[in-house]
Structures are given as structure tokens and as C-alpha cells.
Length: 384
Image (cartoon, rainbow, N blue to C red; front, side, top):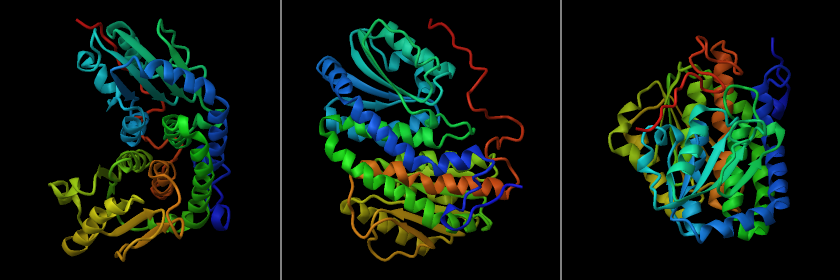
């Protein structure tokens, strides 16, 4: 029987990799921030060499790794002034001419925990072969993975995150948030000092979620919900996407999950909300965005009766009828694009606790082994 620690350490820390990996994230973020600071000059030099030479940026990865791009797309576009696409490797492999053109140069930013999925290696090779020039920024957690060892005729910058980012559990936790934080800091590399001071606050926010909200989140899993909907807009849509996958993975599909934006939910998907549905609102700290978020919460209260509603915000705003509101500060203090790094923690905790409540092993929740840590069985075919 897995033992539970007391109070804010209410996580099954002795036996489960997944629990330890969730709990260790604030320390991991601090370590990654220090690593980026050390590698700052190399990253700046690489970016300066490619930004004047590329036509577009493509953020890519498979599964969870691809969701990092959803949170980074707007930031990369604003900071670098280049059209930025978020396209999973699983899309590129089947239709590479839609993304790689012979007369165009790209910066391909590849995110991967192991870097050993067949699609990850195939995409970097396709980019080299099909583009006029491809600059590679590879962010991975495994120095021995195929992606880390990829050799290219073009310029490459390899960022290997600390060893503890390479999750042993099936579901990506620290690897996801670590790669996301790396992306945020790299996008702000020319303004890094300001972002590093804010990263200190981010780490405190993560610790507060773990210390103060793990028990309330654990209690929620006793609610009889068979569906869950995660809502986030802008950079938080990536958080919603990763949240929906995390809970669904860790419960082996026994909880069916959906993700959407606050405005997008109104256009049909709202039909999924029944009295067996848990709703999770991932709030921005942008007052303009909050207007749309608050309107949606109020509309849900009038038209639907979900079994439970959770919200997470940096600082409270407005009066909303939400069962559990996770609030981290009295006022907004950090850049909107940093918040998705810690806002993933509630969904990770929910997934962990719901998995245990269903009698599953969170480290290996797939009873029939339908999902695995590294996807296998994908054949890569020659492009005709």
C-alpha cells in the first residue's frame, strides 16, 4: 500500500515515480532557469544567426510535446516577428509538403521527452531534405535519445534539460512543464534578466499549489464525474490540451476529456456538459481576456449543472460561482506566458489521484498496454 505524507505533502511519494515527478517540478524549474542563464550566450548567437535568414518558425512534437507549442505560438510570433506554426510531428509526417517548401528556410523547434518516437526523427530528416535551409532548435530530456543525437548539415542548437526532467512514469509531467518553461525563456532570451526574476515567483506559485491545494484536489476525485472539460484561451489553450490528455491518460480513458477555448465552447461543444461532467477553467491574468472568461462562467451557471467546477488564476477577479478556486497571489505579478507552466499542476494532481481512486497504477495506468511511454509500431514510408 502506498503511504501518503501529511499536510501539504499529501502525495504518494514513496512508491510512485509520477507523484515524485509532479512534486519535484518547482525545483526543476529553478534548475532549468539556471541552465538557460548559463547557456544564454550560445542561444542568443544561434537565434541571431537564423532569425535574419528564415521564412517561418515551426514548433513541433508528438502528443504532449506538441502541446508546448500551443502555449508558445503567440509568444514566438511576437518576440521574433516570424510566422509561427504549431504542427505536431504526427501531422507533418503524413503531409510534409504542406510544411516544408524547397525554396523556404525554417527554424524547426522540436520538443521531445525521449526523442525516440519514429515521427520525431522522421520530421527533422524531412526538414533537412526538403527545405532550402533548416535551423534546428532541439529541446529534449534525454541526451541518449535519437533526436539529441541527430546530425544535420545545417545549424543546430541542442538543449538537454536536467536528468530529473526525463520522467520515468508513463505520463509526462516535469518533462512537459520543463520544456514549456525552456521555450518561454528562450523566446525571451534578449530580455532574460527580467524573466528570471519572474521565474522565482513562478516556482513559489508551483510550491503553493502543491502545498495548499493537493488535498482539496484529492477530495474532488470522490465526485462521480465521467467526463471532464478543460478551458483555456491564448497560451492557456495549450494548458487545457495537456490537462485533458493528462487526466484521460492517467485514468486509462475511464474519464473522457475534452479541451476548448472559452469562446470556442459556445459553438457546439458545450453540449458535452452533463451532470456527470467536471469543468476546469484556466484563467488568464489579462483583464481584457477575463471579460470573456467571466461571461462564459456565468453562462454555464445559467444553462448547465456540472458535477464540479474548478478554476485556477494568479489573482482573484470578479465574483464567480466556482466550487474550488485556486488563487496564487493577491495581485498579478508575472508574465501571462509563464503561468501555463504552473497551471498544469492541478490537472496532473487530479489525474494522479483519480488514477489511484480507480485502482490503477499511475506510473503504468494502461491496463491493456494500449499506450506506452514511447510510441511504437509506426512505420515511416518514403515520400513518393
